[in-house]
Image (cartoon, rainbow, N blue to C red; front, side, top):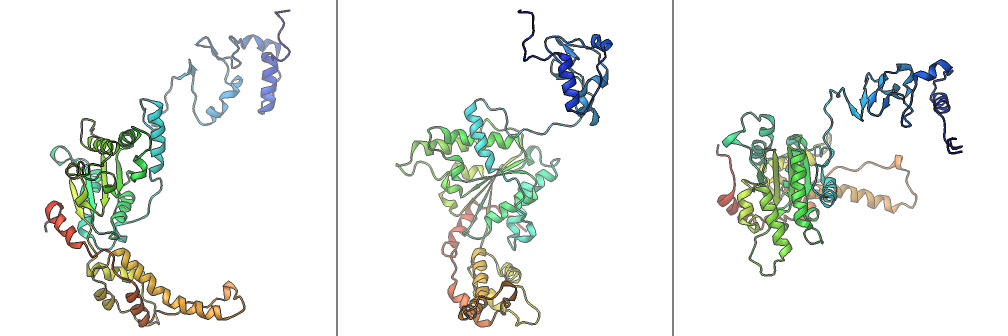
Length: 403
């Protein structure tokens, strides 16, 4: 009784007939072929038994057909391939971490990797020639010409973009992500701060391990003054905040440094509040100033392009009246100017009682000189009050290219 097979257990012949019929291979099993298909330890493939490879005809190995059609004839023994694939396997998303907790933190930080290109070119940023030239020297050239940047000329590890709000610091970071072809980490305070004790320091450590794993990479720390302000001045500073700052300093310049290309690109509106140790690690400190007259004229020409057959927009007047405006303020001014003709059109449409179909809606009228005057009165500069502070900080700590 014990020697009889269970009712639910298939013999090898029944299994092969069912398998061949299901996957399109129908063969009549002859009795003289049964001796060639010895199976040991329940292996139905007939080619692996106790780690020894048995020669079997190719026609009998239907399970390998998908590999044979791709030109891969792999003979397996003990689960290992004897003919390695020529192509290099893709790099894993996460490096080997020391614990499951670190791996979970690495998975959360992987969401901050910029997958697609932000599609911001250097040419799309008007002005800021000095800042763009310094960024290319610090980030682009070491990747493009690694032969020259060795030894004393090793690439800069830390770059700080400082200046008034709305002047294009984040745009420069997007241009770096687009042009440099590096793995770009977009990190904010919420990415590295945790409510659990000790997790903030682990997040910083995992962040740099991920960056080294995906090197060359760029870590962009936006509003870095919220993460690492000056230590020790406020007696109410929490211990967890101090540990986070210390871990960030250690990771940027400590014994854990390797030869992998990892750039730290930071941006702030309050550079004088940064810790002195962080300023030392951010070797290049680049001022992103308010736009100059030539840059403002290019912005107006791009945002308010001239329309043939309509009245010419007074660009010279706009450039003269917008001294002290940031790039964000100029964009807001152009938007307010373009809204004036739309407001006149909307007031006319609202007077009618009938709903006008979308295809029959009239076009927006031209921009008039009074529209520009109205926009200038309604839009005021927002970043000119502390311009002298940035100039003084740039004189003390800034990086410049002398012509």
